[in-house]
Image 1 (tube, helix red, strand yellow):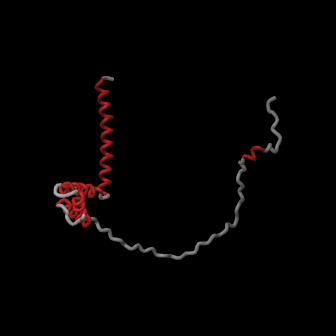
Image 2: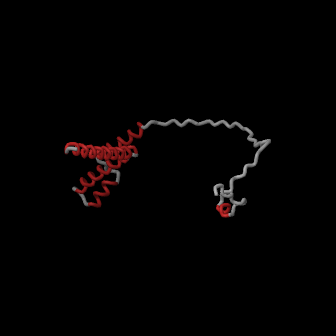
Image 3: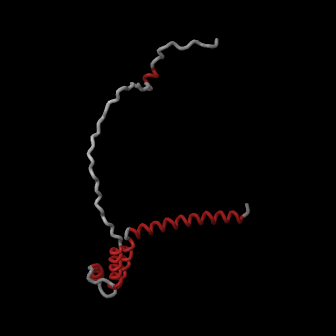
Length: 143
């Protein structure tokens, strides 16, 4: 094998690894988006920006209280709240239908069979193997 083939194999193995990692990242993003975690990330960015802006004009305690009191939302917080509301309204409304399970009464009767045969289980316990055989051992066929 020449060096070109080895380089191709290494690139192919690297590509497979990259695509696998990309698939995993996309799956994590999809799960986080489906659970609404993206709103938490957006809100965290908005709060951080608000806190930084409030720290420029007041003390930390006053800036912290003003950021998280809910009475002074920034434009980004207002947009996030509006988008969250519109997302909730656009969710598909699932109609719950009442399932009707009718109850039909019936009698369940056990009937014994007319004829039956008793089948005994083989005795394969360790004690049965420890006992000597009941018949004498066979005589040698070839002498």
